[in-house]
Image (cartoon, rainbow, N blue to C red; front, side):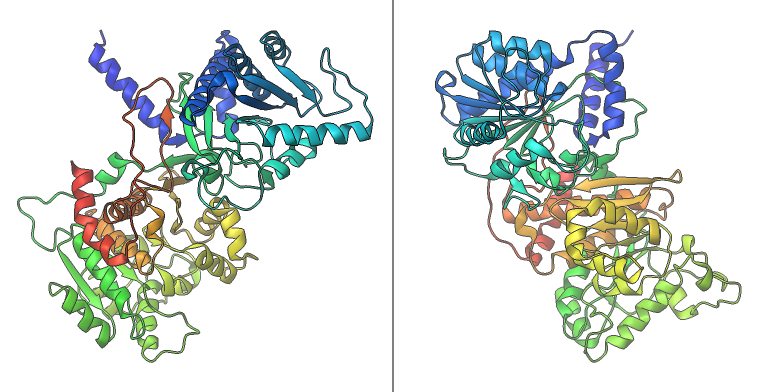
Length: 607
């Protein structure tokens, strides 16, 4: 018989999975179906939770529910029904509630409950068929009604957004689009996530019902007008839009209402790194360890113009639980590395991982000495090529570089047997046509656009920022590399170990991390975590380690900045009390501060 302790641990593990995974619309609908067939009142449960969260938002803003103006934007489907039931509950508790019908119909039972609770209704579509409501009005009257709706919504204390839910694909159209343009944003991001804004009372609080209207539910895009939310109450399971940028920034604080879905065996679309996953990437020292067995990182980084990149990457790698650092760079950078890190060894030798490209100018830069640096990187990367033109029978490797890469075997090198490798910044344009997944690339949006352009895609930075997941997936598909696309929420796409792809996200860093040299620090952390995996980088290991590096990088930045802010916060589970989190804004930091905080971040993970 299962004990109470075992059941509690199982429930805790299931909830931990729920708040760190997101499922696409098709999977969500399949998970709902057996519950609906059994008559489980999911809509009532969803609406009850939404009403309580709405009441809490009003109370937090110092507003008495009995004096509050609440406006509901209600669509024709089940999402509108959720909103109507929630609005009815608020009306019964004394709020003055008006529902604006944006479509031609409303959920019948929910609308009846809303009217019986004393709610008012404003219909916008002349061709509507809503019991007891006028229709067939003129175009002029329709325009007046729309203007009235915009005024009501703009002046409300609380706006309930239940226009679309998960049933709409692509950009909003018609009346919902017009309302979103008037009340929200069109394409561009909010300056900061709504959950961090200090709103004055000229702006209504916004609670999204399941998902904010206008976001790409499955891909996290903002394809047109949308209504950014202060909070989103999400039902059953997380949707990708709650994790993927840019849509995640429009969701505000997310509360998940658990419907007890049977998620065992279901494949999530997106997974978020947590402490447990990141902890697995840190190899604890063994009693019989020597410096070599703890992981040796080789770096071909820095340049005469940017020597600091070599220093930041090398010191970050040394701080991230490794046994030795080997550094290869120009004399000026070597001198600076040794001053900052006298433990470093200058020159080539056997390593367990490589970091290349940080601070190395691109091919079109005019700098003395970069040809040597780029040539060394190109020679190393050539051995990772799995494409036919560089892997033919008559291809002879550079044995000096092969030895430096940690390979002492016969002249024909299998790329999958090479040490793991992090390709950053100035080395991205040297990436071979196709490489194995233990090659991790770490571009920001502009660098990814340049790489994809070189590979034949017609793409620019703005398009990558608008659809980051799509283009990270495309880069992995073309190159075979594990792709880490840097951002406030970092997206990592790689091999799932079974012939498919897997996506992890990390949003552990405060915005203070957007500072010069932070990418060099990430590359050093990446190289260190890759080096300490004992060569176990087949299947999806590189993906997990890469995402863990981003997570550790963010934790260190938060410690350095004394900030609780993050690019992505895991949702709270409705009805599952959690300790209140502080919202320390923190203070500015530089990349060196992050390096100094790495040991504290590791200690936090291990504790």
